[in-house]
Image (cartoon, rainbow, N blue to C red; front, top):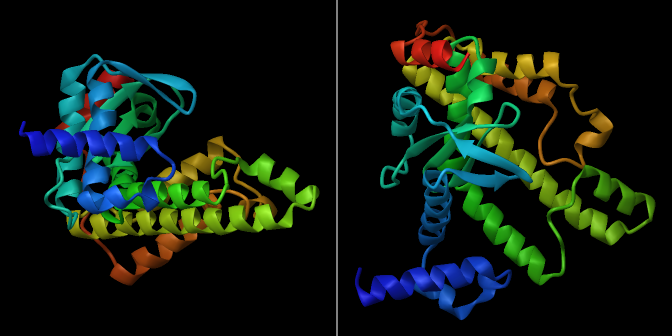
Length: 273
């Protein structure tokens, strides 16, 4: 590594560690892509080390490397559709915790094995992967980092959960509440953008469009949906609303070919179940 590259990485570390990095003059030396890739690589290195915390829960790298490869095979065509061709796209398989998937940006996506067990078909798993690829496609991770930096400079904590926002509203802290609600509304928009990528992927790859939203229907069966009155305080839209939007987009494309389960998915189901 050259001295220039070494200094660049040190600068990125300093910027990411500071809530004021958005306004730092040194930011001119790096790009949004640099920060996005560096943040993703930091997560990936912790993944390779075996375990790291996510939302106060310690997640562990799955010990079965063949399952990792099978997951990568399923995800590869979905990732290949992205316009961000320069990214080092990678899929990580985690163990421990409720069904979930997430991305730190930069082409890195993590899926928990419990989510795969939750899916009955490859198409349902593909819908979750496509959603996360959609987040990467629209650069939501780096946009979140930048917006949090701006709000931190204004003295606004963006990590409030729904209950904290409601409490502030009841205490008539209306200025704080309005700032929180504006930020939450942008986060809900990001979820809709990521959901739209599911429909795009299904149309291109031939997955049955009904499975573009069937995973969300399962969520409704297992977990209660947020109430319309509380949804405005949250970072995610109502699940029912997301289903209706995906259905609407799917109808615009008409009937699709029915891509079935691959050997990679069958292996995952047989192994992880």
